[in-house]
Image 1 (spheres, rainbow, N blue to C red):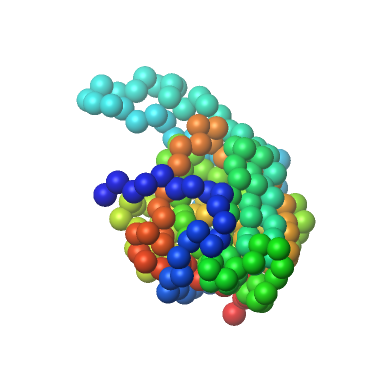
Image 2: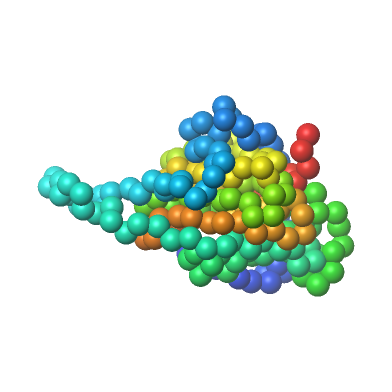
Length: 219
């Protein structure tokens, strides 16, 4: 199935009203994040995994080539604008509407109309070329939705890590995710990721007919 390329900046009202699918919250610790990535104590010496460029046929990629792009880093900004959660990623010059706290047909991008206790998420993606680190610069809790690798994404595979803000979260290449969701009204993260920045996307609303309801409240 070939999905249309997503548009990341739009008015919430351009998206339809849909049912929601609740995503379970998992407290991030050394055990629960295994397979997805790891927690990061100190970002200054933390290396990002870079995946070698895939061979096109039976001839192999020469050793020590195809993985020399390195990484980029910058600040990932998250900010609520009324009922709309926006994200800006300086590392890759990204600008995104991440989701809403209310039905997109009623979400107000000027004033808050409902409690910000969830993000209604319309999209997820993964990076086949490298891993990605989010390290909180404001030491506030945050949430990251994730799913294990595989293009046959299903709703039951999606969870959300609740991080207490004392450590960063690193995810391996090919891990489905979306940008960081702040518990506060706005938050900044050091973002470090593969420089190639290949991205594979899934429009959750189009593919599954629902939005993901990602809680911002710890159980």
